[in-house]
Length: 393
Image (cartoon, rainbow, N blue to C red):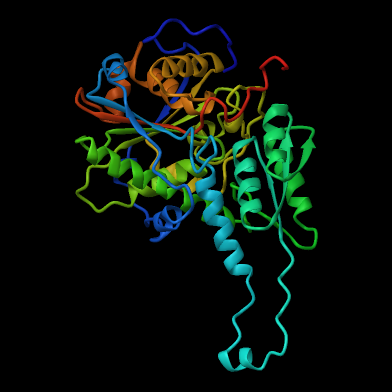
């Protein structure tokens, strides 16, 4: 729906929130993420786990045992989680592109050093955070970056990408239009596409990106244990094309039988709810997108790589308005968590699911009791992605 009526005071959810739930996800299983991802990130300069912050006032509001927010406002020097996937994918890509090693005897016969290979141009489309992460990673790895940004990305976000040394191309139209432009640009000699969404025939690189996000989930496990918390009963994840949600599903649906799995809730803007619409339709769909302050979630087509995981591993999906995301961001800021609209969307989604008319039924569907632990994945800081609706500065 597109009703923009201001959200009433919490805990009543916005009347225009859209909800979808299914049964069977808790018993679905998949293969785990590969070993070695966490060790790779831990060896990067400046690596440290991002905070997992407990917020008792939200637990009281939501009538659950404990609420934790995973704060991704400072991840390896960038204000969003995306660099986890990009750094791992680029490392895999460069390793795959390296020439085969010569045998030792062949090396000894060389009379002159071989020239260094020309840098690759890493090409992508972005709503902001992914492109900046790719630009930073390319610079640190001695490569070039060419980033395509669609309408709706704030000029300051594009400038932040350019400040990392990337070439930035503005694309009239939507995120999907920018992806098509990036695909064309990646046909140039020496260019390679590093996109965080997949389609038939393009799945290896987005698969690596998804693998990179496994570190975030592993940190949550360790931090909950250190806090003396039970495993989560509900994890809420913001969704654009679904790659982070795929990583979250993979993490929690690959555990051995007997480990209590959490319910998994996808949260999208009500102007770009492609995953929710697809779940309701029983097949992936493309939806038209409009303006939203949740710029990083403004995606009209789910990743085909992610789709089977979302279809089978998600328990529920909810669409929220800009107003409810803004209210969630203000409330998190008052509690000491700097979250942009995308990062605050999980709180808006959990409020829509667990409060207001019909909440008891939704709690039953999610299997949440009064002692449950809820984890909100706040994927970006307040400074990560200036909103397209902000006034010029």
